[in-house]
Image 1 (cartoon, protein in one colour):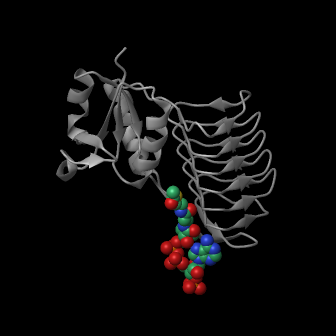
Image 2 (cartoon, protein in one colour):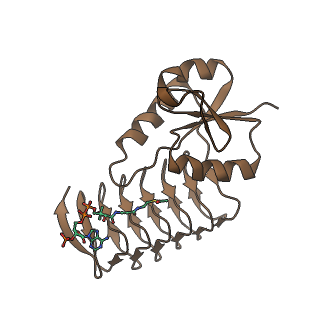
Length: 214
Ligand SMILES: CC(=O)SCCNC(=O)CCNC(=O)[C@H](O)C(C)(C)COP(=O)(O)OP(=O)(O)OC[C@H]1O[C@@H](n2cnc3c(N)ncnc32)[C@H](O)[C@@H]1OP(=O)(O)O
């Protein structure tokens, strides 16, 4: 059966998702959608088949699946805009889980989530729509990750950590069990989070402190 998917955004995050996708072998055809100047080029041998303005025509041409592969550190507004556009056109947005990830069957993973290489998602976790759980992250039991949030490579979240929507937990940070990180917040890389972090906050350091409102 022909099962064709588009990856929306041809940068570094696209390469990560593509690497997982190629190994999964679930799709008969993959195309990348990127800026107009990149149409006709390729990403890891996969052709850039169009730009955002072509999404309706590409759907008509048989691409029924699409996945947002624009990355973000903080404000995911572009990822959200693209995601909503894909839904409006009628694309089916899958979940992409790298083969090497260990995801408990007792979790809920929503549409549009990417789970990268060597990650662990333990029992009772809820990963909401459009979130990114990047390479090597550990999301312990009963954590909740908000929509369009990004848990960066190497992050460790202890049990029952809550991350609000549109937030970013930076590279290699560690978050104590039970901590609540608000919405639209950024935790800088290498942080050790021992106290709750408010909404719309930039926070970093060991111990992690709220630095400014964003
Ligand atoms: C596959 C992938 O690559 S996914 C990529 C994931 N990337 C990340 O998670 C990176 C997250 N980004 C960070 O941690 C950034 O440093 C941010 C967002 C916290 C801050 O970025 P900026 O606002 O550009 O801050 P900037 O670099 O100008 O630094 C401002 C000050 O904060 C300090 N600072 C910045 N980040 C941190 C941090 N994580 N921990 C401690 N101090 C920090 C700087 O040393 C600097 O201090 P100074 O004023 O005394 O010199």
